[in-house]
Length: 354
Image (cartoon, rainbow, N blue to C red; front, side, top):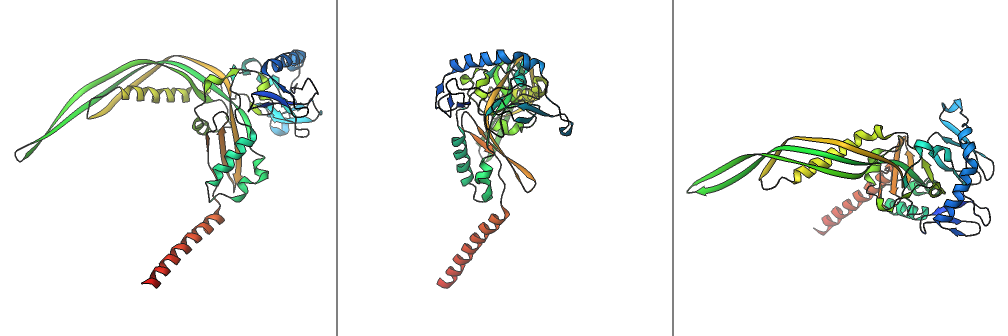
């Protein structure tokens, strides 16, 4: 399958997207290029390669159960090995960014992309500071070799716009108590409560990747979708990217669950003026929905520790972090030994002073 790298028109070096300046920079001659220039370059490259993108088929390797794909680096000619959902990667030898346009064509072409706002050094600093707050963390978790595994990834997402009708039935209770003489009286009044309405929900996200933990991605929300751009493969330069392997039908159940919870809360919040409320039933009908395929930015670090996988993730736009960290048994033992020793010293000193 054909690949291409955005080349600097001045020196021919590889261009990478700069999250700080929102432009494309050549690391060789230090030239900067805006979106309009890159788009014109991209259009010419893609038009030259259209036929090869359509005609060439990826080499399938049975050893990888037909899931591995091989591509040729346009800079050094080396073979790049990826899986069947990778859309942007790096050459392992010359480190040039390699974009695989055939992976994001046709139905796999996103409508929008949300560019990275945090560069790698910012993401690394955020990760290290996050780890400093975890005293029982394994020391090698923030070693230089491990930090090399921190990757900027454009994650495939579906954004749903939904129109709904909701109806809730409940029982409201008002309780009044008073004292007359030496007796206390309680009066409870019961009410049948009905709340109904329509609502429009916009841009409810659900990731379209089987590899990435859904709950982790939800924890990274929210994203500011007002900053999305029309999709251009130039934004992928310098980052990893994947195409979806779960379509809108596969993620619709998660969207439906979220809409149910949102609507339930809206209707519940509309019931006021009662001492207590018991919800009997809530029906939500999604009568219209539309899904848009987009790519959203995340810095992700996966770490295997003693047979268990841990994942750190950072929102590539807002800097919000989430994830789990392994605990070092050796550091735990040392930590609790220090605490125990301190407590013993305090008790001993207290005994000496008595």
